[in-house]
Length: 105
Image (cartoon, rainbow, N blue to C red; front, top):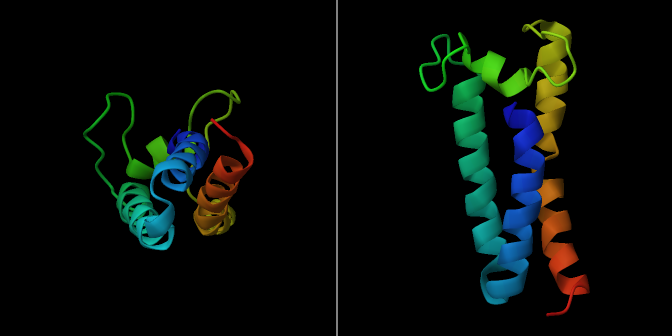
């Protein structure tokens, strides 16, 4: 679920940074990505996930939204896909910042 939620969150945060904090885009961008990486990786590699009922592992929360009707469990292939998704986080933030420059209020 978190991988699905992180994309729009990063786009929105990027948009806010680009709209209201133009002079601090780089610093706030790095801080945002570090927070998302830290929280996401802790959740992904946690054996016990106590925040939401129904999620046994942190990777369950990160991978499974049950939107697709399939349960994903960790394997080498899924871990590689997770790394790729984590590596795309700066792109989503950057696109949000760029979108803020295209939209005028």
